[in-house]
Length: 321
Image (cartoon, rainbow, N blue to C red; front, side, top):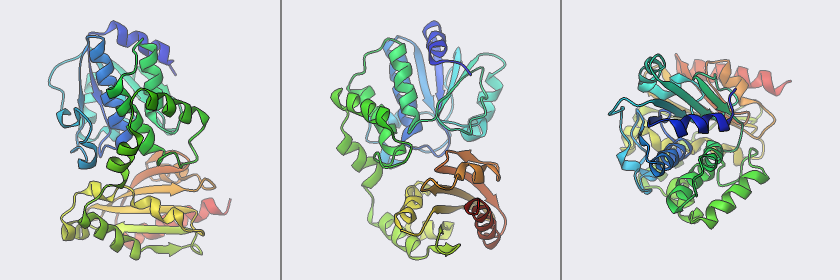
């Protein structure tokens, strides 16, 4: 694995870069990308951010989020992937990134333990958010954090740490957040806009979903399910399901919470959360996914009842160890 110092050296020498976020972007990947984009702009480097998916409406409150492109508009010296554990996480842009590996330098900066080290330069450090890695990189680039950079970086820390509530948060996370707050990051606004604000329709979807939670393994596993029919009922995009997976972990008996989103007929996106005793990265990895010990994801295919059975058995195997 490379060091951030090596990657900083690459970026100092380059003239241009395209920064890739993962598909179905969250606050961490967008915060990383926008902070790095601004940092490169300060260094007079040409850059842009690309994402295959629509940007969630709850994250458009920060400057520049609406300017993110669906594909590169120019041919840069460097491709940079942020917060993506594998090329497949780039979605439709995977082909663009991998094709570019033959012609240009590629960089991969991530915090997922399941990262496949897919670029020429790879830096992976398991932290509460990847924005912490990006902040260290920006410091190595010799850039003073301003208000806009502080907002982007705090967005990633707040959202991926669950407002500093997850087991991955440590003293270093709080120190970095304190520094960003001193530079102008508004934690109150970020936490409200990114994590709390919702429409009446989204509140209704949430209420229906949690009322139908399926409890298994003596209530140690809880599974929420959102179908395409439910999304149509409330006229909501798939991004409206973000955060639903966290609810069941507030229940005393639940060790593992899973949220299933029907992507299309016979295909489901699964998000796993754990209180820490169960390694959900290991479970998701068995189905081709990955992430962190306490937060991971993967895809399932087939009949929904078969998917429930697969999840139940996989969690049972890990509960019993």
